[in-house]
Structures are given as structure tokens and as C-alpha cells.
Image 1 (cartoon, rainbow over the protein chains, first blue to last red):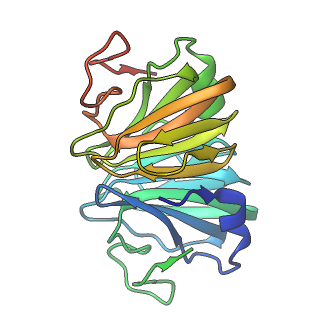
Image 2 (image 1 turned 180 degrees about the vertical axis):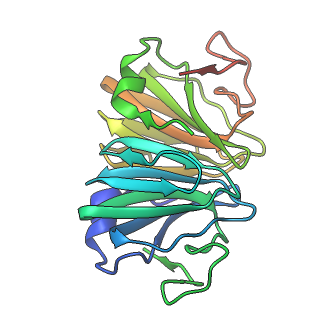
Length: 121
Length: 121
């Protein structure tokens, strides 16, 4: 049982769009991600995905709904199956993700952005 | 898909030791809790429980291990079955909990602090 300090966690890596594993519980993971620019459109077949912005601003675009814009201290759950695209176009955003441990960042899409393995902090 | 602003969420209630439901995903819940003073010793038979301190300081006491002290931006997972007691003796702490939705705050213990129902924000 080791605590995780989020500032230290985010300070420990630079790579963007490559979530790091901060904690696991009940088959779910808390991941830390640095996001900047536009990600790929994708969805997760089985997994709901929670985004919680720790620093900066994240816009989540949807095919069939208005975009959601998350500022610091704001969270949103994207349900399984919902096509979405995270975009951080106002500089780097630091984001906590909460999702099943095995969730891949690009969901149903295989691209150069895909990270099959999530490095532990 | 409505976003949740954590500041607004914590501002919306005063009751301590009575978590509010902020979001649900994959059978898990994000709950917001205001904690002050000592809680009851308890454990959760089946549920790992994550504490993330948003404001203030939370000490988590264990029977067989050293206490953990969480400051703002620090998180800890207490595994299922581990007896623990949350204590906030430096003033009120605002804490996010991640745990299975049906988790009861006092786990295996029935006390006046038990909240069977979790109110949605």
C-alpha cells in the first residue's frame, strides 16, 4: 500500500498520449496522461472511461453530441461504445483516467498512437 | 453525459462522512466525501477502495501497518479485507472515493455512521 502523489507522478514522465499506471483496484486502473493536440477518433467496445482534468483544459468531441470542455477539477464519463476524440489545443493537459485496466488508449482503432502496454509510474 | 465540476460538487452539501455520488462507470462509483474527525474501524469484504484527497489532509490508520497520511493530490488504494480507519484531525478534508457502486461507507460494520443509500450530487 504505497500512496501516489499526483504531482510527482506527472513530473515523472514527458511522453504525451501514453498513459501511465498510477493505481489498480477492482479490475480498474487509475492512469495519468499528458495530452496535447488532437487524438484519434475511437471508442471502447466494453469500457466506460472517466476523464478528470488535473491541469489545463481538455475538449472531448463526439459524433452525435456537442463537445464537452473540461477545465481543472472537472470530470466526465464517456460510456462504452461512444465514439469520441480528446483534444487539448490550448497547451498540454494533465488528465486522470479511470477505466478497466486492460483498456487500450485508442480503443477500437489501431494506429501509431496505440499503446498496448501501460507503464507503471 | 454531463460533466461534474468537483468544486461545485463539494459546495453542494455539508454533511460529513456521507459520500455523494458524482459518477458511475463499469459498476464503480466516484463519490465525494467530506471527512472530519475519526471514522469507525471497518473493512470491505470484496471491494478495494481508493482515496484521493482534494483538499485538506487525511490519515488512514491500519491495524497491521503504519498509518498513511494523504495530503492534497495524493491517493491510496486500500485493498479489500484490510481493516482501516480514516481520520481527518486537522480540519475537514474533501476526498474522492473510487469503489464499487454498492460499497457501503462502514463496510462490515453497522453503526450510526452507516449510509446504505448514497445520494446523487
